[in-house]
Structures are given as C-alpha cells and as structure tokens.
Image 1 (cartoon, rainbow, N blue to C red):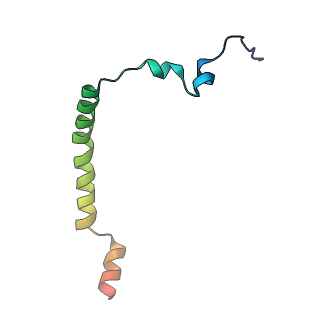
Image 2 (cartoon, one colour; image 1 turned 30 degrees about the vertical axis):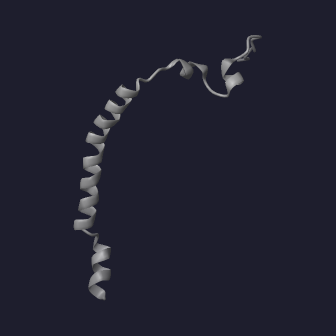
Image 3 (cartoon, rainbow, N blue to C red; image 1 turned 90 degrees about the vertical axis):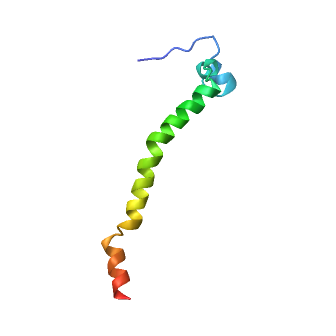
Length: 68
C-alpha cells in the first residue's frame, strides 16, 4: 500500500507534539481530588509491603546474619 502525502501541514509538525492534547483542560481541583483518591488506594498497600519486607527478612539475610 502506498501512502499519499497531503498538502495541508500537520499541526504536530509545527509544535513538535500532538495538537489534540492542547485542547484538553484539567481542572486543578479535580486533579488534586483524583491524586488524593489514588494516594489513598496506592500508598497504604505499598507501605504494608515495605513493612513486611522489614519484618520478614529473606532466608538469605537470615543465613548471613546467623553465620556471623
């Protein structure tokens, strides 16, 4: 299949990025609310996993610790 070039300039070529993204408006208050909601869902499990990694060390760490 052969592609044909059009004579109209591509807006992405002029600015170096996609022009469609320029029309998107994100309300700062809604963005903050979304980030808070994501933080409430993501941060606690990550903290729990970190706590488990501290409380339950791997077997390799136990072997090194016991051999000293």
